[in-house]
Image (cartoon, rainbow over all chains, first blue to last red; front, side, top):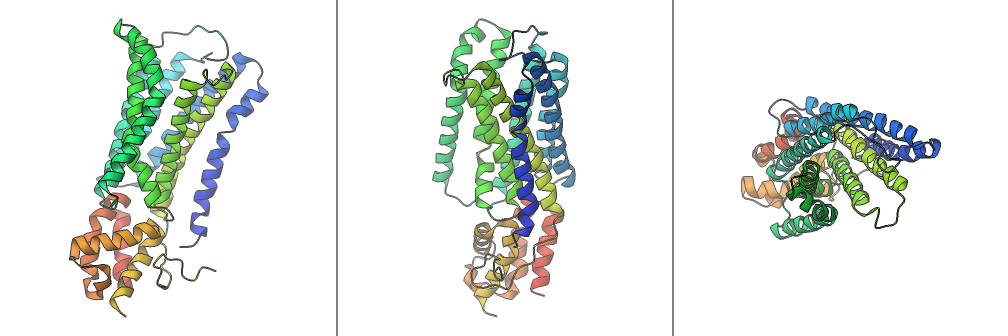
Length: 288
Length: 79
């Protein structure tokens, strides 16, 4: 395998990282919080469509009946459902200025639907990896990674869960939405653990790239949750918290797009020619 | 060609796609699961059976169409 085959994937990854800088650029150039909220409003809608487009490309590249196709389709849908709700709700002043909006029930409902669809997507993609039979790591190591993932999920979702649970018990609809969202976000990270393993075990091969970008997307969404959960405690200003959240949102969505495109590129790539074996069996014979 | 080089050639074919580590693991795993032999004992005549053993895994991970291309390439390599 030549490194040239990986170049366009690497460039895609670098460009995706660059997208994460843009929310800071918006913040630097738009001092007015209302204007900035408006910019983030449009930006978020565009990002969700961008992510959905990438995942849809992957779904459409695979054939009907392929194990991973429904996973990509669910992932695309998980982003699409956020767009109409976000457009209906309008710009959010959160962290930028005091604002009044329409009822958040639609936004919360869309968020719940999105989280549930994302969990279904990652379950299907993880299942494809598991059923391939290529993951021969020991059961003990898989359990340890799951426990670590659960600990991270609890650390991120736990504080908000504890804070909002009493209100949810009193029947506050928004609090119920927050609690369910916290649980779904935590579950998402736990069910997606096999995707992290796939990215690691396929390292060096073209097939790794979609999994690497999916993993990056998951980590970005973890970052989003971490800033939301601990930004205050860390002493960050509300505006900094908001810009950081937008950064992680951008990375989470953009890496989903990158994953979908990488899946297509991988599946339409001319098959790598093996080099004459040199005893290493890693296809690197002949590399200077 | 000795038996070891057959396994190594299949690993090399798969390495570009699955990475060197997974290519080695897949060859070893499916030699044992599908043929009941270690990769060191793999003969050219065993390659179609190894390809058949790899088929479900590759179809799951790569999709049916691309997996068949990979298996055809393995077949051509040893024809």
